[in-house]
Image 1 (cartoon, helix red, strand yellow):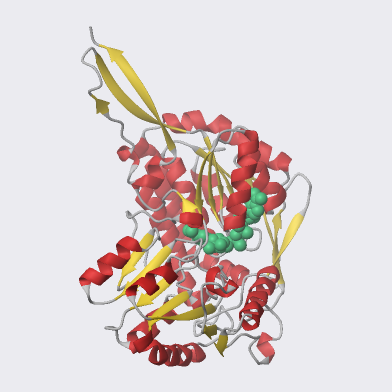
Image 2 (cartoon, helix red, strand yellow; image 1 turned 180 degrees about the horizontal axis):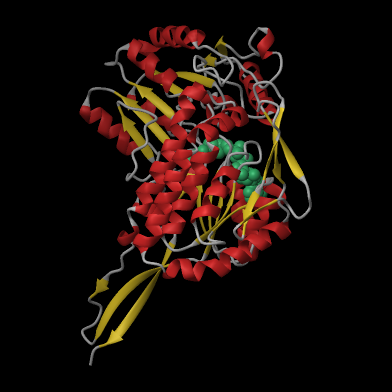
Length: 484
Ligand code: NAD
C-alpha cells in the first residue's frame, strides 16, 4: 500500500463510519504478511443501526419504478468500473489472488449489476382462472430488508453481485463482506453513498461472530442469502430459526468432479484440469474441479501431463502480471489446507507434486503452498471427499461409467461437474445422472449469466445468476377481485 495504511469504514445510513466500539480488524497481505489496512469491526449495535436505516429507506425505494431503480443500479456499476484500477490493486494485496486473472472481477461485478438492472420489469405476477366470479391475480412483493453475507475469494465481485438482485426486487440491503479481505468494500460503500438513496444499501464489516450472526438473528431481516462454507451455512440456518421464520438461500462449497472419458486427448484433459483448478487464486474457488476422474486407459498419460503443467506454474508476487499463482488467503486457511495435505499423506494417497512451502526468499513469509497433486485417491479418504478450497488436485482412476458416476456422486457436495467426451449419449447420460447443480459438457469454470447457478445436496439451496435469483427476493401475494 506504499506505506499508506487504510482504515476501511462502513456504510450505515448514508454515512461512512467506524464501528461504535472504535475497534478495527487488521488485514494483512497474504503474500508477505504485512498489514495493509484495517476494517471496522462492527458490533451488534452497528448492525442494528444498519438494519434500522435499511428499514426506513425500503418503502420509498420499493415505490420507485423498476426502471428508475435499474438506472441507479447501472450507475453503481459504472462508478465501480471507473474505480477498477484502485479496486484491483487493493484486492490483489488483500486476497493474494494474481492480478492478471483478478482483472476480470470488477467487470464481472459490474456485469452482474447491469444484468439485474435490466430485469426489473420481469418481476411479474400471473392471472389464474381459479373461479369464474373473481379475477385472481398474483403480485410479487419485496421482503423488506435483505441480509447478505459473502466470502473472501472474490470480495468485490460477490459484494456487488450480492446487492443487485435484492435492490432490483425493491428490497434494501445489509451486506457483510469477508473479514479476511474486507478493504474494497469501502469503495463500494462510497459509491453506494454517492448514488443510492440514504439507507438503501448498508455495509457492515466484521467477523462472523458477532457481525454476521447479528444480521442473521435480526428480527426485521426475513430474507438471508449466504455465500460461504457448509458449516457456516448450517450455523446460519440454525441461528435464523431461533429468531424467526426466514427465507434463506445458500451458495456453499464444492468437491467438483471433472470426468474424462477414454475418447479424450490426454493433453487436452491435462490442460483443462489445470485451468479449472483456478490456481491463479490458489484453488480458492467454489467451482474448482478438485477431483479429476480419469478413465484408466488415460490415467497415466493425464497424470504425467498434469504434473508437468503444474510444475511449470509461476508462483510469485500477486501484483506481478507474470505470476500465475499466489498464496492462500489467510494464516488460518493456510494451516487448514496444510493439515488436509498431511491427512492425504497419512491416508495413503500418493503425492505427485507440491505439498509444501515453495523454496526461495520471497516465499519465506506469507501463506504459500506449492500447487499440489495427489494420485491414488479414493472417496473414503478425507481429501477425496472434503472440500480443501486450496491448490490441491486429487486424481482418481475409474474403469467403467458406473464407477465414474459413483465416484462423482460419492460426496456430500453437488455444486459443479465437468464431463469430457465426444459421445453425445454418454455425455447427456452423465449430465443427467450426476448430482450437481451446474454441469459443463466439454467445458469447465465458465459462468453464463441467465442460467441458474447453485448446488445440490450440501452445496446449497436456491439458484443465483438468473431470473430465479431476482424472483427469490420477492414473496408472492394472491389477490382475488369479485367481479359480480
Ligand atoms: P465462511 O463460511 O467461513 O465465511 C463466509 C462468510 O460468512 C464470511 O463473511 C464470514 O464472516 C461469515 N460468517 C462466518 N460465521 C458466521 C456466522 N456464524 N453467522 C453469520 N456469518 C458468518 O467461508 P469462507 O472461508 O469465507 O469462504 C470459503 C467457502 O465459501 C468455501 O466453502 C467455498 O466453496 C464457498 N464459496 C461458495 C460459492 C458458491 O457460489 N457456491 C462461492 C464462493 C465461495
